[in-house]
Image 1: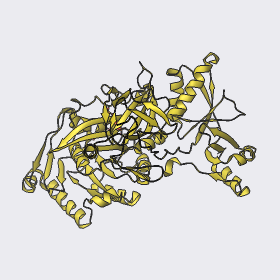
Image 2 (image 1 turned 90 degrees about the horizontal axis):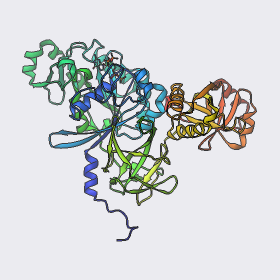
Image 3 (image 1 turned 90 degrees about the vertical axis):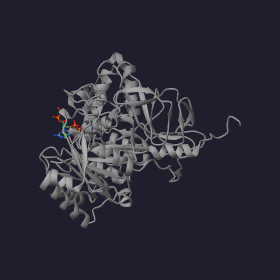
Image 4 (image 1 turned 30 degrees about the horizontal axis):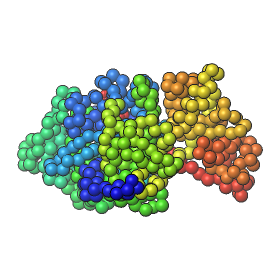
Length: 540
Ligand code: G4P
């Protein structure tokens, strides 16, 4: 065998390892309980022994996933982590990859990137609030990317809405038909357990102090359930029969085609229903399948190794200040030390520093399979959307940039930090923290940050100061709409009042307008100038 011979991948092994993987993310509006559910899932999978070790908001215990100071102060999670843990159901030994998504709408671009790397999403809904704006937005992203969704109605231990009414809301507002797998016994606020609609049995939950350990549960037959829960059980049975008559039973094909959504009820804080969610992920969530490349061809799982970068992130570890590119494996096997090819440049990429990340803890990663996430440290050349492959070339589709709606000129406030300023801006740009725009007129000393939400500016400002030692001042610009413009029209657009053309670092020319109204007026008056839309945050 010569050095150039293709890698021999043991196909049955790759297929079997891929089949064991469930790679998913939880999407929700802030406060619906995503961090609590994440902790509970990991707890149930026995990866940690006590709740509180993965996430932590203000006042909560050891925090791992919300590591940036700003996040801690605000109690929001901006940065995304990937977690991997084993979970067994009967004789099925699975590997769960849970990708964390930022909850705040200002970081929807980040969330979008993470959602390119999952095979399934869990849509978490607060029982008292129903569908909230950010849930709706993220749902649209999933629909657009054809990601199957499992719906979880959380906080059933607290007074909330009628379950049938919540189902109607989901059907009516987003056109996704819920197919409950469990049905609550006891109204919201009096959560006794669930009717398992697949077996007809009652799963009775018992509270534990603070929900700190896995909640004990008993499985009772319908007769015993009636004895135990009386009217609450009878009502659950009646409502479940209504659902059956209405055709709201689980159906695999329509779940995978994103027309229906299996649904269950939980109380993440009490650990009720959390293991049912894990079981359901194992039983019905789709495992990795061959990813489509940029030409629409499917890269079969057994092909040589390939992956795409969905996120680049720096500054997670204040002691090291390093930068990690997260790549999702699409085909083949990964072995640490493999020399891959970076599709964008054609250059070799050495993977000596591959890591797996669990919350904030990192460990060396020796091998990975389709569906897994590899953290590649010191990967200066990698950007979100980049493909890495071995032997057989492949390029995965780029991750679209969102249309920015906020713009600000950036200036370094410490003239002696000129070098750090330039380096810092470049780094934030490569990570995709903000988009960076420039023009000859403004010069290199005053680039423009463009963002989907203003909190991205806060992150950029904080990072420039705290981490890159180059404090900056931002001055907002009066633009709110961006369109792609062809170079031949750029000068003409630049002369318009309330408009300006800037060049993004990837070479794309963006025409900025103060308002949608100005843009429409310009288009009416100049129909020959072609202006193209970027992906808008609301309609992905
Ligand atoms: P997020 O990541 O989606 O933003 O939500 P998070 O898990 O932080 O939960 C938001 C609040 O809702 C927290 O309360 C949390 O304890 C509570 N919560 C989560 N799941 C449940 C549940 O199933 N039932 C009930 N009753 N509450 C739940 P907090 O007061 O904001 O914070 P904390 O002091 O409890 O940490």
